[in-house]
Structure formats: C-alpha cells, structure tokens
Amino acid sequence: MSAQCDLVLSEAAGGIAAALQAVDCVAAEVTSTAFGRLFASGGALATSLTILLVLYVAFFAIALITGRTNLSVRALLPKVLTIGLVLTFATSFVAFQAFFWNMFLAGPDWVAGILTGDRGSATMTFASKVDVVFLAVEQASDGQTDIEAFSPAGMLWMGALLFMLGTVGVLVTARIGLALLLALGPIFVVMALFTSTRGLFTGWLKGVVMLGLTPLFAVLGGGVMLEL
Image 1 (cartoon, rainbow, N blue to C red):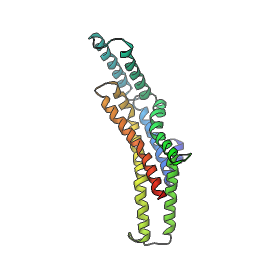
Image 2 (image 1 turned 90 degrees about the vertical axis):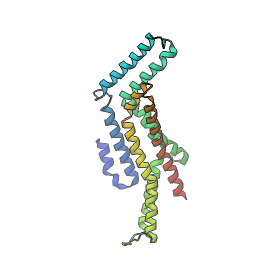
Image 3 (image 1 turned 30 degrees about the vertical axis):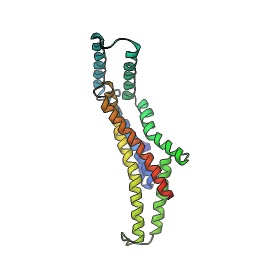
Image 4 (image 1 turned 180 degrees about the horizontal axis):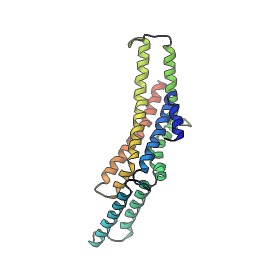
C-alpha cells in the first residue's frame, strides 16, 4: 500500500466522501498490483501470453496454407490491429489505466458533473451532501438516548440509513465490483485474440460498462432525492 493510500485510509472515518476516496485509492492499488502479476514483464502469465500469440500466428499461417485466407490488406489489417491492441492493453498498465480505468471510472463521474453542473467531482459533491444530511439528522436527535424505531427520531434515522444504502451503498458496491473486473481485465483482453473465446471478452466488457454506469445513476438519482 502506497503512502498516499495510507494517508487516505487514515482519514476514511471522516465521512462518506473520505470513505469513497479511500475505496477508490485501494481499488486502484489492487488493480495495479494484479495487473503486474499477470502478463506484464515478470508476470506469472507472461509465458502463456507468448504461447497464445504463437498459436494465433500459427492458425493464421495454417489458414494461408489451406487457402482459407490471403495476404491482402483486408485480411491482415484486423489481425495486426488485434495483436497490437491485445499486447498494449495486456502488458502496459499505463495504456490499460488510461483507457479502461479513466473511461469507466472517471468518465461517468465527468458526465454526472456535466448533468449536475458541478465543476469538480460530482460523486464527491454528492457524498459531501450526504454527510451534511447525516449531520443534520444527528443534530435533530441530539440528546435523545433511547430512540425507538417508530419514533420521529427513529424514523428520521431509518430514512437516512435507507437513503445511504440505496445510493452510497450501490455506489461503493459498483466501485468494488468494477475494480475486481478491471484487475482481471488483462485475462479477458487476451481472450479477444480467438473467435471461440471472444464472447468472454465481450461479456467482461459488458460487465465493466454496467458497473461503470451504475455510479452515474446512483449519483443522479440520489441528487434528485436530496432535492426532493
């Protein structure tokens, strides 16, 4: 764990916004560590990637020999692009992070900022508003030691907790799920090489898109609920 993440984790108890920052930092660290242990230089599966690339070229050579394809630009260009993209995203964390992490984590937050008119992070702004809500609820029930579930103070706390679970809970769960999928991303990127396994890559990409868009709807829906 980096010193920056240690600092963020030490402040995670300061509120929901600080907790979300800690989740993002830990998720980025986990993704980076997992990526380095797969197909990157010195990774456990680097040899497997070499074998798969050799097989991919061998299958293309067999197709040439049997006359099922030719050496035209139309036949070569998709294969060259596939090999180039797979090698780039499976072995370079800088490229993988710049495309997948920024697109599916920072991208929805940027769209939410445009829709809400927020110049900064819409997610952090929403989390700060939720902190204000809980502070107001705490002040409203200040001095009450025995709060019953169906008392006015109890209903206030129950409403605040349900609101947090329906928005921040979904937001955090989606962030963790997205981090896990991105950590396994290089494996599914390599599966895009072969037609028989390309469906697994497509399924992984759909899952990443869905988990990337979930925080967008959670922030927008939660913002509307706060306004109401």
